[in-house]
Image 1 (cartoon, helix red, strand yellow):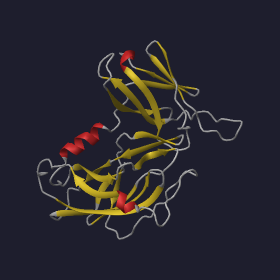
Image 2 (cartoon, rainbow, N blue to C red):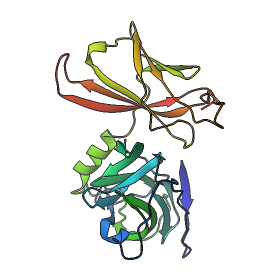
Image 3 (cartoon, rainbow, N blue to C red):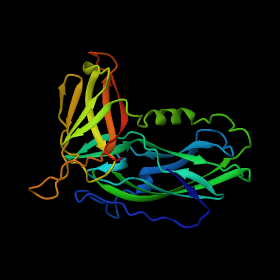
Image 4 (cartoon, helix red, strand yellow):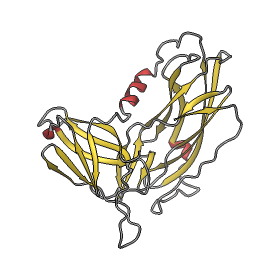
Length: 288
């Protein structure tokens, strides 16, 4: 989704949702700003009127701490960004790279360790006037280890705007390539839902190369994340058992047929190999 950004001095204050099991740091504990730093970087050296470019907010995260994906899992809350620009532009919502699944005390969080490279598309109008675009990002986030600390930060940059040229790739271009490789791809697998079982099939499915499968929903409160997702096979079809959130002690509402999320496929580089890689694929069922 691309949304318009007009010059503004307002700051959007975002309330983060915490798990009841999360422990918040006391006043004498570490500070969020000492654990997470933010900077805005661009894939190209300049922006071009009438074109769309990739930019990123890079979160550098202290060792053993993490920030969160759009669905944080059993605990935590996602990073939120409010943009301010000195010219009217359009900027997308966050394009989230695939997160890690981080277990802690029986909970599973969907998060980033060491670095989160949050991607955005910025569209510069053809009638843009000026030699540069100043962008300010007001950022709300939650950083966690064995405790969780809410934080706010700000990053500012001035990007050159050039007619007819983007100035070539920036020194951060390799980081953009790595981050875009972690964006979920289009559905290479045929996916359907039967009750609380996700059926996954691919026309040429080399079963022996698949090391693990896991589904991450985009929305919170849909599944229990702290339970296993058992996988069984029937020919070339994998059956992933999902555990929906229960509305009360006796009744489960089942899995929403309009389910959306990521299918994480950990695949060996070759049959019998210990080396593997994980690719995420988008899943949208029902009316999604």
